[in-house]
Image (cartoon, rainbow, N blue to C red; front, side, top):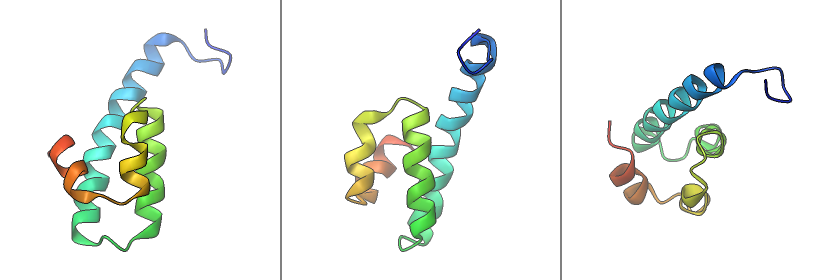
Length: 72
């Protein structure tokens, strides 16, 4: 068990869901790039999915790079 009371079996599906959510946030941001809350949730999902390599891209709101990386 992890320090938060989760087993690895429950953590792995959560990571998969986070990766899935990233694609949906990117898609939503393509429709409305000014949605600040969507950018914030995208950043959280990137961190939870261990995609720290994309945090700076998110901070600079570079949708072109994000769309290439996370196609739906």
